[in-house]
Image 1 (tube, rainbow, N blue to C red):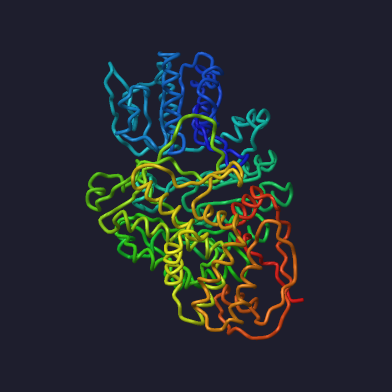
Image 2 (tube, helix red, strand yellow):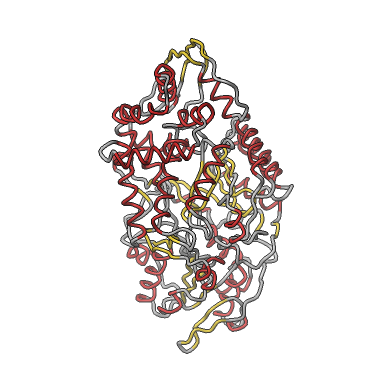
Length: 628
């Protein structure tokens, strides 16, 4: 079974989907009587080394998504070349009736939708114990012709755990190169029908899995010292019992030290419950941050993608709760959705900042997923969706030394947003996240908003204009680099990631890359940015004091704890803003002790720990501040 995953630093996920299929199939006596399981392939090792490690396969399965589809196709071709009679079975979110694997002949059987029951029956049919033509939701070859069986809603009667049934035990015992992260599944299905998501077309109700089994899997993860656990539920926190899972995760963490971190895709419709869960996780030191997603703040876009959002008043109250309790919360937008304009996207960013989301906004490029509603030809034509096929963009991964490129289909224009405005919107999004969320100009922008009435987007658009007009400045070079990156994407090339040896092996999203580029030339940047920002101020003393505070609270390589003397009480002022309980700035001499903790002088270590690990927890900005 092949489910090759990306390496996040030195971590890789267990092949959960492939493991679930094997566990379910081999729970059947007839399958056990007729088959021996070979192995899982969960890393992108060279095709030759994989082939060399396999012994006369009868069935070779491939679990496919955007990050491994091309690799799986290449591996399947090599399998068929060496063992022409081997049956290749493809499944996963990346396959559909129009997939190229059906046309190129390297897939003998393709499964659509949930795979456990289909895969079990396929194995039985190949052993002469079932009829291949009676298995719904598959394609199989008969006399060289692709035959598609009827589509039916098929739900497994019960889940069989690959963890508890021992299917991953050998991997844990023998793997020496990486550590494993685990996926846990407490329910399956999604009540939402978001057009951009490939769960939107899944015709299955939400089913709850056995609670005792889920808790036993948590026990297994604790006992096997799994550091990071991710919940695959579409809406964790949707059901009351989810609090019990969080309580049990914390209990096992307190008893064993594992799991260390838990993350989930949280329910969009139960924000108060999600806050409670994240408060518990945060208090236990296990939180990876809470999601307060919007995807868009345009009512027209939300109508087009069949989605509803929480009211902004509710969002503002939640941001206050998260900030008061020291819990990291991030918001998500998707750029390129039908109906979005540059102006509506700009307005969405403005509203998020005005309502307290200063620390973490994630902006994802709209990707045309093969099984999404958005990929329907009629939908594409209605909204004049144009995509670019570019290098697949996964962030914070170590690229494998395998000469097989994965791809993404990124929406670069719609009837409401032409390509040039898509580029402009992306650059605005990067500047807001690099200079505001990551802290470089956050304090200045907040002060100008509250005291001078300068809208956040006006401020950052002026920064972009300054950068464009001063191409040799640090900001100017960042702007020119971004312009070329996005223009290359529109032309159908390039990527939305960045790699710089000075910052280690990992790939970086462009907003973090922009920030790291500034870090490399920090002193020059600070001298140049002062020239830009002083046009907003008529009080030179206040500006100098503000810049001293702002520069001091941003973590930099080799930062040390130190006192700073100020003429204004900036700490109290910004603390009130972050808690959405504004109080006026007071002029008074004060000394602050600002302690960044241990910060490495090594650029790659700084980038990983402070930007990658620290960003979601707002750890990239110093919060250990007190009066001397």
